[in-house]
Amino acid sequence: MKDPAHAYNIIGDNKMIVTLALSLLLGCSAHAHTSGPSPTTTATVRVSTSWAWVPGHWTYLKVGVRRHTVYRKNKWVSGYWTHSQYGKSYRTHVQGPPPSRTHVRERWIPGHWQGRGHHRRWVPGRWV
Image (cartoon, rainbow, N blue to C red; front, side, top):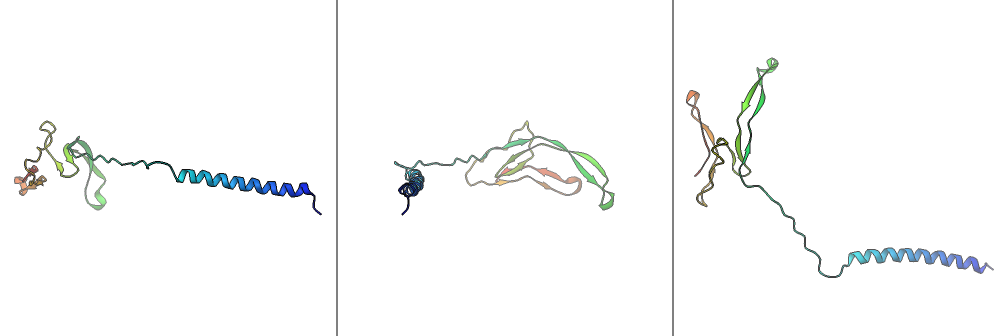
């Protein structure tokens, strides 16, 4: 016949395991079933829809073709106004950003180059 103390030790170990398992289960169910209404969280996304000034800067241009591209020269890229929806406007910083839309149905025509040769000129963007 087995020793009764040995039998109690086995039961005690099983009680400890069952107690640990129940404490883990109760802890998980407590977090899973919160009382009261769930809090509503909304994400706020902010998009800048205004004109922003990009300052002018110097850039390097490669001069030459294929094997003869060892020479580089600096070129000044003038500043411009930029918009996430309407693109770029090459108005000066002093003139400020392009005017706002005067009518709901108007659409923005971006600036572009017109003409050929020495008659080539920049036509700024405008509302049409």
